[in-house]
Length: 254
Ligand code: ZN
Ligand code: FE
Image 1: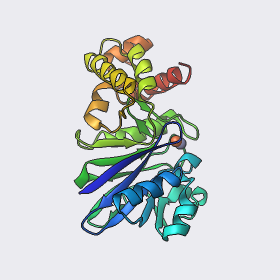
Image 2 (image 1 turned 60 degrees about the horizontal axis):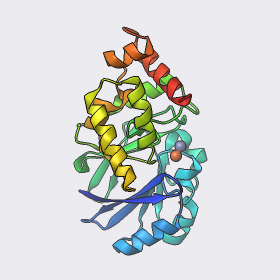
Image 3 (image 1 turned 90 degrees about the horizontal axis):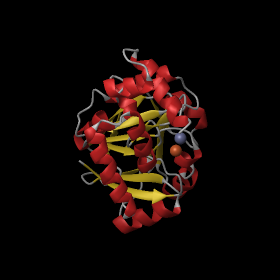
């Protein structure tokens, strides 16, 4: 089992430490910055052994080279985008596994936000590190991919257990909730969740991680089969990619 520690950095990024107590190995997931990572490592008394990157954006790889220089850690990242991952040592892609001490991650290619985005699922720890692909009540913008690709990527998460914790890379939840309620206004689970989120944010609390079960029940980007959503969009009976694409488009303009 991994012990996972969340580090808020920049305006709304989350960096994670994932520590395998049995072996003492510790990974940092998507280190946007370094000062806060060094401070958290020293607080915890953990030695950095790995960096796990989900995609090439600077707010996910910005700390790679400084951390590697300081700790000689191993950098793991997407094979499909290896050329844009600073200092990458080990390239992984869809269906690969990567082992951190006694914890094994399954890797998924999840193109859409970028063309080389990956996610790491540590099944034994119920932990999904999904970068900017799935957010609490949202999904990443389509900078380098199509709605087809992104829907295919998100669909891969539908096969994972509902209790899986969604360790996404940004605290976007409150803005996502404000949008979600406009496209699925009659979803009681969403109404309840939005109230909880607004209260948590009013107290400055993190709303991440959520669980996949919560996302299946309330995240419009995971719910193109929802009749309520389809009705709001004027797309009753449309195919799922069409509904997903329209939802993404409306969020872009929200
Ligand atoms: Zn990004
Ligand atoms: Fe990001």
